[in-house]
Amino acid sequence: MRRLVVVGGALAGHRSAIHARRLDPDLDITVLAAEDELPYQRPPLSKGYLLGTVSAQRVRLRGAGEGYRLLTSTPATGLDLAQSRVLTHEAAYQFDLLIVATGARPHQLEGFSPDESVLYLRTVGDANRLKEALSRIHHLTIVGGGFIGAEVAVSARRLGVEVTIVEQSAHLLSRAVGTGVSRLIEENLQQLGIQLALDSSTTIESVDRQRLVRDGSREWLTDLVVVGVGVHPSTEWLGGALPLRADRGIAVNEFGLVDGYSQIAAAGDVASWHHPLYARPLRFEHFEVAANQALHTAEALVKNERVAYGDLPFGWSDQGELLVQILGVPSPDLAEEEESVVGGRMFLYRRDDRIEGAVLVNAPEELMTLRDRILSSLSSQ
Amino acid sequence: MRIEVDYDKCQSNAVCEGLAPSVFEVRDDGFLYVINENPPEDLHAAVHAAQEQCPTQAISVSD
Image (spheres, each protein chain N blue to C red):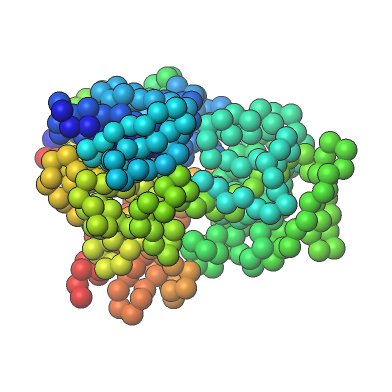
């Protein structure tokens, strides 16, 4: 019986295991999950889960732990390629086929070690701590103006907490989108009463039970600091066993197979995937990309029927009254141009004549047409 | 018409329910239910709108 080992028990790991089971009822499937949780959706953790409108039951993925052997609290500690084994603290797991879906982990900011008043949000455990804290604190400082920071800010504000976002760049989301989109997001946050400290160099020190944040000439006391300054692929455990690219993701081809291997694949945040539409490797941290790539890796490994992942990458962010939808790669270094649409806003990002990406703000009815337009633009040359 | 929901992607935003309440329903348990998998023709436009406007693109429709 062929043995499939999946390293990672989040969306990509769970979905690739479920799909592998569909493709081969006889496959022996083991999923190694680092957390002590059944597989769950992460997007609600910065939104409805904090507000209490989305329950712990609701975030769980359907069929979690069914159709495969799920080993929780079992992080992989190494990959022994010579003997085709994944190592953990307790045991070694022999594989014929391997899927790496270890996701990403938050960058840790120097001087901001996690403790009772400094928190990084990634897991449901982190979200539980944050949710509990939001019910009793007066002021929250968010270090890092990315999507997670903006979403947490909106949730906290809705719960009546005073919020300041500190960002070292001149704009929020400056690494993800152009300034037109950044400005809309900033305006929305400010209208909700959230303070923005941009162009900021921040220091932080303990004062009794609170933290004193200094930002240039300003300083304020805060009860909790949430750091959201991006993530990096969780590849440390591999100890260099698999090839990585400049974006720090595992190098995989358009089918999801790791460069140089036919029995090892990777999907989700950890994978630097060669994207046929863009003719270059790309790594995403989108929920939907991980969900779709997982199916491709299972097909490529289990069925040996390789189908390139050529979807137009899609992600979204809910920020109160603002729905931000991201298509493709809206790199901030590309020219941003706005086109008028009814009801909302639409921004396009071009490289030469090709539309490489776009952002919709409160214009979900434009999504399908825009997707087709970008797809045809990308494949026209 | 055949409606399929990818429940891993669904986040129960209930946009679909707003557009086609006789087809989609988000119940008190927080989960989306498709209450009419073969909606009559006069609802097809609403179902397509739900598919297009789902914030997480969890709905697929085949005719």
